[in-house]
Image (cartoon, rainbow, N blue to C red; front, side, top):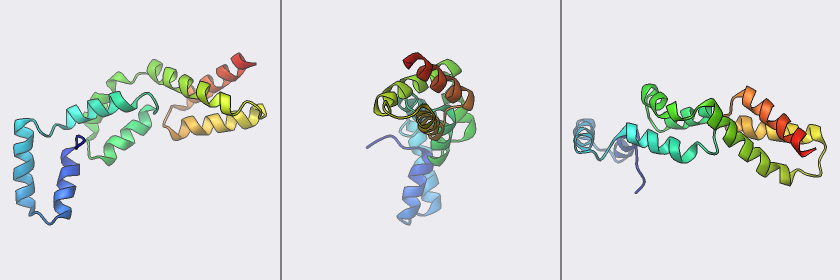
Length: 137
């Protein structure tokens, strides 16, 4: 079984009609013995997913999984501007091959959209796409 957050486990137990007081007691015990650790979950999640997503997308995914904002921010300390730029550059280089025969404006739109959907900051998106297209030409 993949690691889960406290919120995800609580949601699953509630879906199975487990009484709320039992859910709280079980999850408290799980945290006490180290079976549930939202901080460790967030750290692992960020490490495994940061190569293909920007900081904004990672924050949203962690929130959906029930990780509180403070824990998410602590986990995201490893995702700095340079690492986001490198990840965006790798994605753009891979996508450039599949858009080789298209006009530059079309390629820019597609690359901008891809990176924006993945949560990369606008300044990184604009700079990386333009630099990579210029380098290719």
